[in-house]
Image (tube, rainbow, N blue to C red; front, side, top):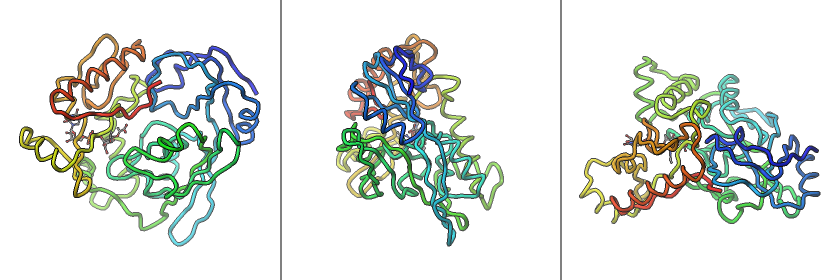
Amino acid sequence: MLIEEHKSLKPFNTFGIDCNARYFASVASVTELKELLAQNTHPLFVLGGGSNLLLTQDVDALVLHIDMKGITVLSENNGQVTLEVSAGENWHEFVLHCIDKGYGGIENLSLIPGNVGTAPIQNIGAYGVELKDVFVNCKAIEIDTLKEYTFNKEACQFGYRDSLFKNEGKGKYIITSVTLQLTTNEHKLSTSYGAIKDRLAANRVTEPTIKNISDAVIAIRRSKLPDPAEIGNSGSFFKNPVISTEDFHKFRLSHPNAPFYEVSPTEFKIPAGWLIEQAGFKGQRFGDAGVHKNQALVLVNHGDASGTELWELALRIQKKVKEDFRIYIEPEVNVI
Ligand code: EPU
């Protein structure tokens, strides 16, 4: 297997940051992955789609590019289909494949950057649907022992942009495939999200299909979110903060027009994009590091921003939001 040295990671992260990997290898099968892990003596850095990553320095490790491909139908009956998808499949291409086959359940997750194997790590979610809603299990190799494990939904401990793989399991496993259960008919459509409703109404769609919803989501995302192929970014840079009901009521007194979502009887979520916009950062640019003009939650690389410049901007935003609202916003991306 080819192990390259001093390889630029620019094509492998959606921020388009030009940092180098000390060593780099791509693995296209579980066998190759195990072989490489068995012989490797370097620290390891696992790279999926590179869409949730901010590189602020060269990576002094063996960067492992997970490139396994394949979609297998495990079973299909009673209006349900169970599919095992290899970790290196591109998420959005997989969504389009499902729409094409008439498989429902992930149409709201159209156009999310990244790979299938990294989707469970942060339990990707958008427009009222999360990966966990269709998740059956994922297979993973334990790095230290090379043992293969299957983690079911419960074992993955999914939360909002959270899972086992960001907590106790962090750095321990490499996800090699994900199994999902989708519908082949009587799809359970999720159209309650305001922007989807509006888009369907504008398109005069009264009885939406999964394709109509996917098209609506694609149009909404394109209108708000920058395309990483055109301008470097990693989607939402911060998580939406969750605050206690008590803090929420205090916050509402001084900010009666702020949008919010009730998460549970004891917790409320405030859109970080709103907080960042109110703090004055929307559309701002500091050199080549900037805040997107249509969605303040997204930091962008206008060209040659370094990871450090983007990180300094993130810290500045975090500090100002804290000062203005007494709310701490936590990065969603992995900062290296
Ligand atoms: N808002 C502003 N200013 C902004 C951005 C948003 O005032 O610059 C307000 C909007 O007007 C709206 C509210 O904030 O009232 C929510 O905005 P939006 O619907 O765009 O959703 P979000 O909460 O900002 C989350 C996800 C997105 C996902 C959308 C849709 C997180 C961290 N982000 O954003 O996920 O697409 O909901 O479900 O939860 C991603 O993870 O990369 C991502 C894009």
